Image (cartoon, rainbow, N blue to C red; front, side, top):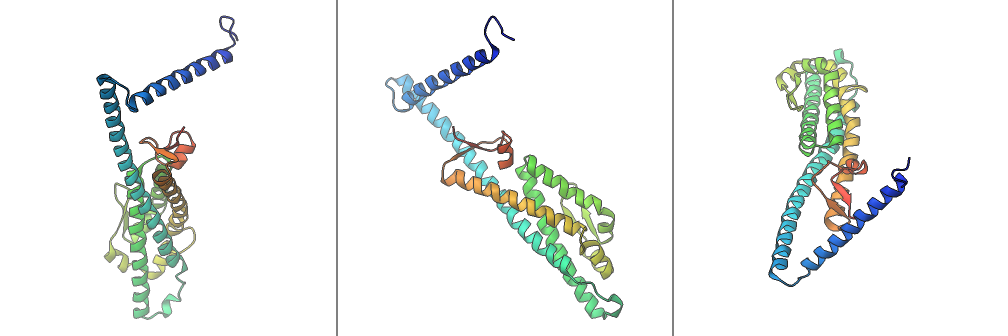
Length: 247
């Protein structure tokens, strides 16, 4: 419905046009100052603006470097986790009653090696996602914690517990004291905790690679500006991410 005889859409377009005009005028004035306008006041203002810009760029550069470290850690840990998970899932079933003590001990040692590596990678991923923050990382972290909760009882029997920060711990003595068939049942089959986190690691890896690509583009090509809000490229696509195209 028209207001004071003016169509609301027309009024809105006029306001947008006026705002853009003011922004262009302001940018023109600022450019003139930065290019060395005459007068002490202008020079002082130009120096202040440059100083503030350099300070901001330094902060954003540091933030980008930290994000690169976090996503690099996620990427490497996710790749390694997938490797350990594949070994665990591929470990064959045995005719347990026919194994010698030495064969059983060897099987359990291999299982412990792979599980220890899996947990180490899991913890690196969780720490990097927590430090980086953002909606996508928060969702993945919540899911990873959820997978543990789903298998908490069985994992606990093997000496695997969850810390308050979501990372995992393993009591190796408790693990080695467990039966080999139980290890395979809890950690070495489809639908287990191992299988669940390995599948989610695929998404975490893809997210890390995407963010690293955007960070690299921001650093080297200058096509993006990095800001301290949001968390990752998916936040940006939703309208509020760290990486926003320069207008």
